[in-house]
Amino acid sequence: MLYEQLVGVLDGLDLEYEIIFVDDGSSDGTFEVAAEIARGDPRLRVIKFRRNFGQTPAMAAGIDYARGLIVITMDGDLQNDPRDIPLFIKEIEAGNDIVVGWRFNRKDKLISRKIPSRIANWLIGKVTGVPIKDNGCSLKAYRASVIKNVNLYSEMHRFIPAMANLSGARIAEIKVRHHARRFGESKYGLSRVYKVLIDLAGIKTIRSASAAPILWFTTLAAPFLILGLLLVFGALAAPGFEESHYSPVLAGSGLSFMTLGMFLVFNGAIAELLFRTGDVSARDLVTNTLRKQ
Image (cartoon, rainbow, N blue to C red; front, side, top):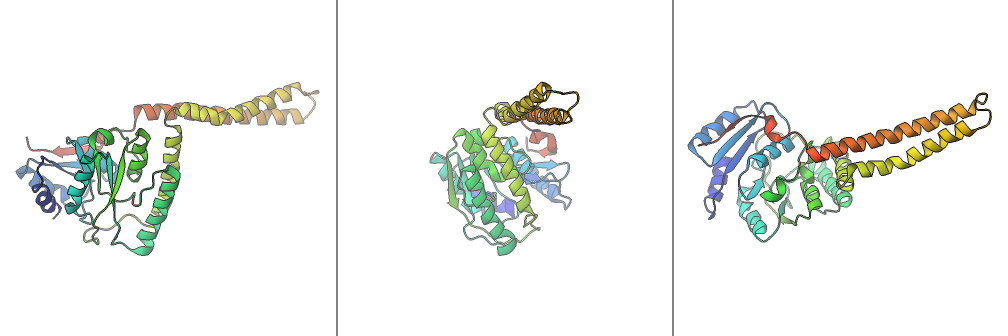
């Protein structure tokens, strides 16, 4: 069981620790079992979502509630090995801000899991400029002061290193053990490639426009606004404006380009607002949290 393995490893380390389980709206009795364990162990806290929100919100909630200086995330299906945790702590203590696990001997299906993952990791590295071999590995360690300032939303957990790199975070990658799945079913596969591409486009936009979104969008809008103004003025200045059917076409085209330009400017304003205020807090998704007082 995950709890016994975690305690077995962490008790052997000379440090204080806490364990946070996040129940992503399961209906199989997981929360009840975890809650019973938490009642007897003050180091364990359990968070339950109202319904299934996905992996990124679950990670965000755990990170949000964590109180330690080092935060380590991992899946609960025992494919990640708790025995690797000391290696991550050592790398953080060596000065790194984020340590990423690399499942170099991955125990997953070749066609549906390994090949899409390799393609996705290659694309992510090329687009973001942060060459990580295994962005999808959930076993990662973070300096709390860094990860708590990274806004997680959608399914952006695989892009955490790229997002943290914006603030100059030091990132390391280490080899970790990986076990064949024994519990549950994977929700990832070839269908996720499309989602990765969409998220990748989003993270590229964030990296490009994060400093001043409205300025970035206004720059994109400028050619359309200028072209639109030229077409409108050209239509108004054309001889025989009332009689010619070409001038209204120019005017209509100009107004269309100007509308597109203003649309981009408004998008920039919205992006500026979202970037400055952040997304919904992970705490808003939680219906229950147990802790031993």
